[in-house]
Image 1 (cartoon, rainbow, N blue to C red):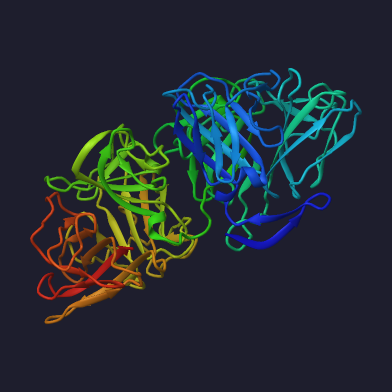
Image 2 (image 1 turned 45 degrees about the vertical axis):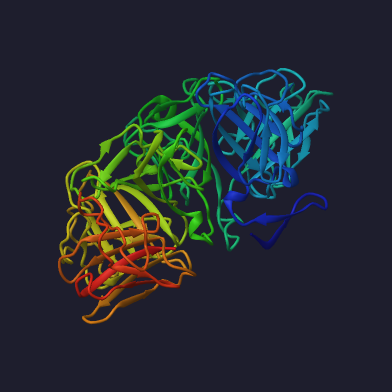
Length: 635
């Protein structure tokens, strides 16, 4: 979808501003096949133009950069000074991605790859090519139409360093993308600050030698002037800096949004690579950030480094490459998407069994952010895992702390878990984070009462689950039926509602959820927590409450076009289990298998507690006990 807001570029060029970050940027993970592949990432390179930046995660191969201005098959490498080469790394730019050939930088057989695609768009990114004239003060036109955050220039007709200017550096201070060196002053480069329409280069071989050809990549800096999202008013890219403190409790950088991609460099010393992190490969809390370095050909490596937060990111290591005391670090940060609510539940929720000859074990049509897993025929509990805590899991029927599991990986475009095989009794229920639907937040307690925790759900949450990750405590659950009461439930027990005071009686907002006066289980100082936030979205999901009275069915109108694929129910006025039904195992006008979130019991197949309807479901009379229930359903 596109809104009607437009921005005039130079001359007569007019662009329609895209509505979403997903229109202009993609991190895409895939495995090479040594032949040809089509990468479908939803980015229109054929019509709009842009850059494909590819790197093998598993192999020590150079980065390969291909852009629409120089054309397909023209490769340059950020870790080398060499001129462009002609090869079959990228063989076509398509309306929804690109094609690759049998090139080690993009498609070596058996290697795993990350590609980052940047589409040309005002206030986000531009690609410019030009021929040098050797005249100092040469102005090069661009179409960002806003503050320039970063400029990266490469001479493609000959050898040269990758000359990089960043808005946090001085006007004529530059730094080489292909080196680990610090920034330095050179008046021959960008002595004049770039404007919204031009940047100025000096008479230098790396940027403006007569007769040489160049490519420049320009990244915008949004500062309250972004024109993205459903209302055309969201920022999606920031180019900034921070000062290291030399501690594993590093700086918290406020971007005004949660990032999905970071490029960070120590500008003060020659120690430290140009590190690239993204949430697809892994930026989890409590474990290693998966890093690639723009200035080296090395394979991916993991160390504690950066953790995304709802409004920015936090540095979590004292290493000089990310957090040397007193050092200045420059960065480019790109916002996590999508910005628009989903239009269909199939975009953000799925249920499947473990069935894979090639990982991921649980397949979906979207990158998974949160998953439940259970062996439905055995005496096992649900395990809960998330992209934010990759490689770790919690058990919903237990107060225990999280445990490590190397197979609980989310670095896939189409599912999660790094295992193979066919196990028809092993199910997973999978959610994608999306506005107005579902969100995940990790935070550390600070012992304060009435604390507000930022989130990106986009609406006030109607149901919240919170669990301490690093120690023993119950799962705390809040539902909108408790608004104004301060009550909560325990996800790991069948207890009735409890006046625990863990959540604010005044409720929550579209930007924060509010904790109450009781800090145990939700906000003890130094303890680590994970929160899952759920909301009702027309035609997609429904958070509800219902009372079942004696002698009659209790109908729940979810507003769906057909029956739900997932239903959860919990009695609140007395003891009662957390029931789960789904259409993969069966929601029919008859017996429906159920599982319990608060129990290790195998599924029960001999009961008829709910029946589907044209817009929701009915709690069947004579099954579940009469009383007050809360619930959650997905279409």
